Image 1 (cartoon, rainbow, N blue to C red):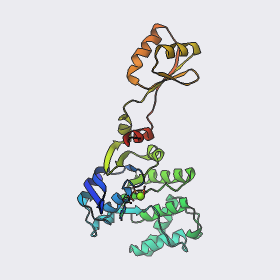
Image 2 (cartoon, rainbow, N blue to C red):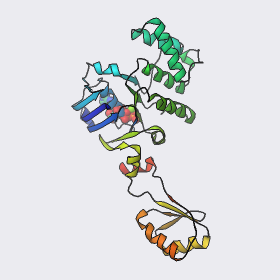
Image 3 (cartoon, rainbow, N blue to C red):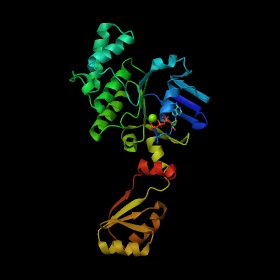
Image 4 (cartoon, rainbow, N blue to C red):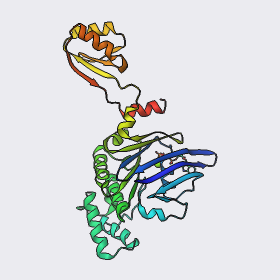
Length: 298
Ligand SMILES: Nc1ncnc2c1ncn2[C@@H]1O[C@H](COP(=O)(O)OP(=O)(O)OP(=O)(O)O)[C@@H](O)[C@H]1O
Ligand SMILES: [Mg+2]
């Protein structure tokens, strides 16, 4: 089932059209990466999903129900971590989460046990100091705990890893993967290695349109040419191949890169004819980053 669907969504601010025709669906229990450059419109799209902005056109549904601007029963299914989460920083994390539970109308005993459960999930159960002294990574993790408090069916995180160091990022990504059992995760980012690490599906937003989308593996395969690397046993054989085929490139000691995979049979034929010794032949994995640059025309 689709937890979130956007269909032909458009949004302008004055004469600036930020979203032109945005359509994508997020299947239940996936981690979905919403990718785009700075200013692409990721936060705008998230605010539309939360009914905080009024779309100019198109439809959005959460858990099968339509989202309406300013009248948002669909938000009962959603937990939201904004790009810069704000807390009452004189509170401890447990006090803060209990306070959120109180606002949500949860009975006292339940809000305490739920707070502890969530602090354990995000690795903050030992931190009893005030939020004021928290690092950015700790604040993001607390923000996830808060967003998960009322057991949302959809967790929306706006660039949760952007300001974090590699360790903080890894910890946060691990949490997102862990929670997909209990919810569905939509997170925005421009950090493509994060996407490669944890996403099941992605959508690339560029100039107001979704230019690429689908399961990560399928999107990767869309790259026109992935290239092949060959490693040979002897340097003279490498030199021989380079002289025979000008399109080959030396990529390391006794290693040759063939960028146009369709020419591989020609190369292999000559290798077989001359009885050359191949140590390794490997298809190069297309980095998402290359694909992204290709798509945005850089
Ligand atoms: N309330 C607003 N009024 C006018 N313009 C806005 C408003 N909100 C966003 N914009 C413009 O819309 C464009 C998209 O902004 P948005 O914040 O959605 O991008 P983003 O993809 O989240 O970027 P970032 O990666 O920097 O967070 C930007 O050019 C921004 O200046
Ligand atoms: Mg943003």
